[in-house]
Length: 274
Image 1 (cartoon, one colour):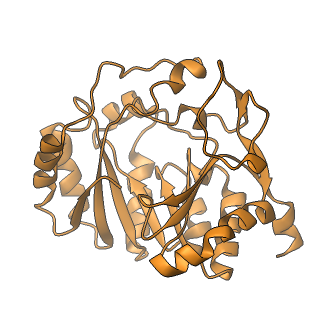
Image 2 (cartoon, helix red, strand yellow; image 1 turned 120 degrees about the vertical axis):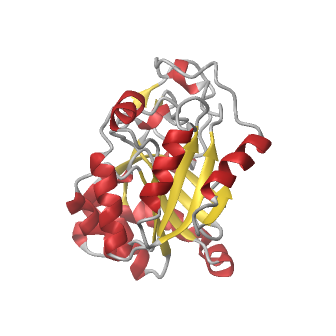
């Protein structure tokens, strides 16, 4: 490992071992702090700010290894690449047996581009399968920096109408669409992740426009339909944030099957859940 890589630091807020919904096989998912989007349905509001932040109350649920925990009343910890690689490599035997690897998620991992790029390179040098879970909202030059060391992009596609996208996420979708097309043109393996949020993303218009957009792309390997869930509901008050979707319930299985049926006009593999 080079001296530069040793000195690069990043801020993460969680590490999930034995993850099975963030790419192929058994994986370790590393959650980066910081996200430029503020989706109304976000289940990780603690990821929004890039720096460690305090929360109210006690017993905040966090899976992060204690060696990477910050102070008891904070979420987020600065780590080096050697520290993180030691944690990732603990499960190498499971990656080998299952065809798994490591996934970098968040938050939005591209908000820490140098840290992400160096980590991806180190993982590939170690022989690990790499995946980046991204909103796509980053300068294209960052994707240019990480593309050669990323085996799979888990790419979020939420709302096709730009005004609605701005309303519910806080940003325009133009850059997101541009980067997705660019990755497709560069023949990268892409898994689309579409959140099914009742009354917001599940309209006939949005699903139809999403399908019309995806049908033009050639390197989509799979489409994951992610049902809205309330797992992060209790976090909002802990971080003094407003939960704007407290009245929305999780879609039932039958409804998710109907949504999946609409996407089956595409030739891609459609999967409910990650």
